Amino acid sequence: MKSKWLVLLMICMLAFSLVLGGCGGGGSQESEQEPSQSSDSGSEPAPLKAALLTSGPVNDGGWNTQAYEGLLMLKDELGYEIAFTENVQQADQANIMRDYAKKGFDLIIGHGFEFGDALVTVSAEYPDIKFFQVGGEVSGPNLASARFRTGELGYLAGKLAALVTKTNKIGFVGAMEIPTILGEVKSIMEVVPEINPNATVTTAYTGSWEDINKGKEAALAQIATGVDVIIGIGDACDAGAIQAVDEHEGVYFIGWSGDMNKLSPNRVLTSGVQSVQIMIKQVGEKVQNGTFEGVSEILGIPEGVQFLGTWSPETPEEAKAAVIEDENKLKSGEMVIEDATHNL
Image (cartoon, rainbow, N blue to C red; front, side, top):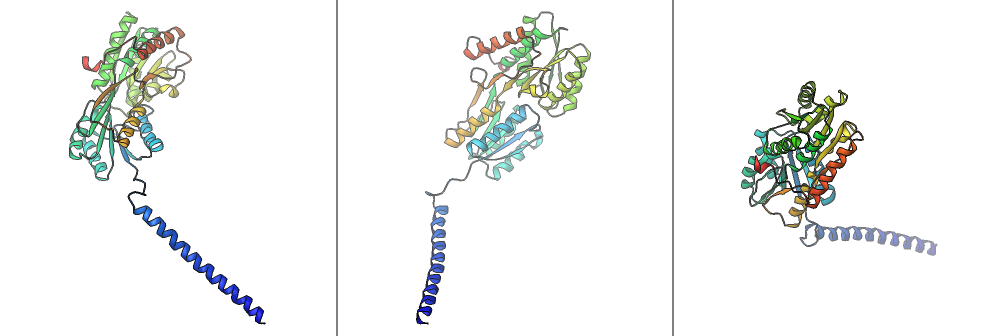
């Protein structure tokens, strides 16, 4: 009996020590974690936050989709927290930027030429926040911008259209008559008669970046006059123009901003791709490593942010080869096209 009670006593003492040990271990773990959360030297810095404003929908397959993909790169590759507002009206731009600034965002991006005035105004109100414009030419102590060199893609698209058209009637459907688009149109107008003296170019503007129906209506109106190649710079409007092209045999489209070929692999001859993603990622890296500067840059094919996209199997091989040859000359510097916007 004595040995039995001795065994029971030893079991109780062991269990009691285990309980104490468990409580003591938990307390020790909490006390080790707490300093690491509150200590400046041991804690990880809070992730940077970036916000994007676009004038159209981020699923337009073109200009705004590229910006959204660039924003996702900040999140997935650089660890940013992100937010965006699409379909932003001009009258609401500044207030939406202010709202993001008040919420502690570190980088606020206005995607497009039309955001310039609001960025200048709001960046001055929040000097500790970095602002960036894609597609414009604004700058300040905490405001930078980058835009694509206009004329390069206009030249290539215009040359392709001039080589491919059978009716000698080329159409252009744009969203807004803003400098960056007008610069491309100028380049198209100059190269077409050089390549095909019999060809003419008809232009139309929808007044919208997001109205698919307006893009389709503008394209249909041009097709009705005999246009058989349409160049589009209209974001979501491009999707409507491609719909119109798909409905008419022998009519083709040349896309812009994003690689539009996926919307109609046969009818979209190719696209002039502008890599907004690279621009946005680069500015995110600069904010992250402390090298952000309030400068305005112009980038193009030689810098690797502009290039031709996927080719349709229906593109005539001779025309394709001639256009690719010029693209390669632009890459190497053998051919130089001055920025067309400054020469309007």
